[in-house]
Length: 161
Image 1 (cartoon, rainbow, N blue to C red):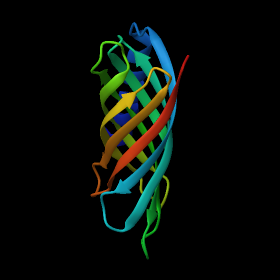
Image 2: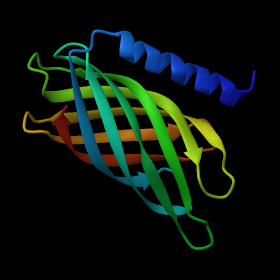
Image 3: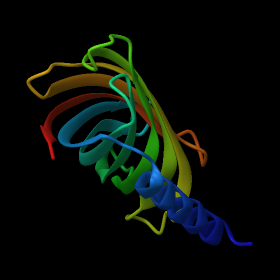
Image 4: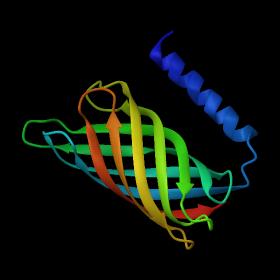
């Protein structure tokens, strides 16, 4: 079975699970990501994303994130852009459902420059979410292909749906 077929089958399964769970609330967050690439040849990474978050309980959420990230190349290195599509688990350490949290996401990065194809993507993060919707987080985003990755600051605002 081709990797792309496996990925789309897994994505369809994840979507089906989201719609069949007893998620009590939904939130939509939009964020700006400013990153430092972990590979030589790139100066800076900048991106934007949208995150749909399904609250399973006050302390546990299932996020689905999509966006665009662009790595700015140094000297003779071409810029690199990709569309991340990820899902995972977000756990708040406070019983109120805000404050300090840990987040783990996995998914795919679809390259949009230089015929880069797609790669498995993983992203652990830690952050702080205020009850007014502001969310600050620090994440690592790594790829299964090559040594490409970034450490990024995510500044976001969330809306209840």
